[in-house]
Length: 288
Image 1 (cartoon, helix red, strand yellow):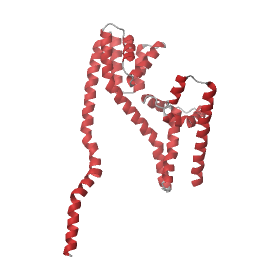
Image 2: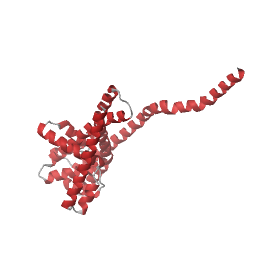
Image 3: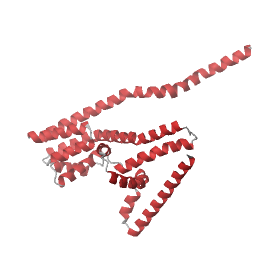
Image 4: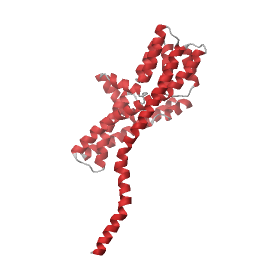
């Protein structure tokens, strides 16, 4: 067992060294421009670590051709932080890293190693769910302001897609603005506005964005003014954001119960009851 873990570590270190050495040699031969070199150097650290195993997994999955439609949808909803092959490589690496960490800490029981392997395999899924929820909260925070700006532009006489282009170019870079940029690119490639909005709703996978897209589609189909639909949607989203804030505030005391019970309360008991117990034991010793 020990020889197996040591051999895996040696293989990973040698493969990583040769991969980075070969990539540096290739970049020197090609002589990339300065801007492209800075973009490559500023890549995410997780993607750099997962590059080599993801290449191997992509070759294997290319031959097997297993469908991962649901997983692809989840990665798109999270903003595509890593691709599918990198995500599978992440799960495999974590499935080996957790038992290896226990083995280094001298927890050599087979049951503990198996549980650690299962926990490591499930950890990327929890990480992906956290990425999706944080992105949806970011979109809910920025979407009402974006809708207000769209309402101002449309009310000034601009077309809806022209308004979207103007708002995206003038506002800060955020998750919803990047999604609108993708929608503009789809419209420029020949898709209809209704299909581009539907794709936006599928990519984000949020009830708030789905309600926004549905109201715009209904206004477009029925011929009603878009400004009224945008105004109503902005108000509803602000009310929904306020309600989620109230819900989080009401959940805070319940979430604080366990830290108070297991971390703060024992310290308070030691501070309050400690001197009393010391005096009690000293009194008993003196009486004895």
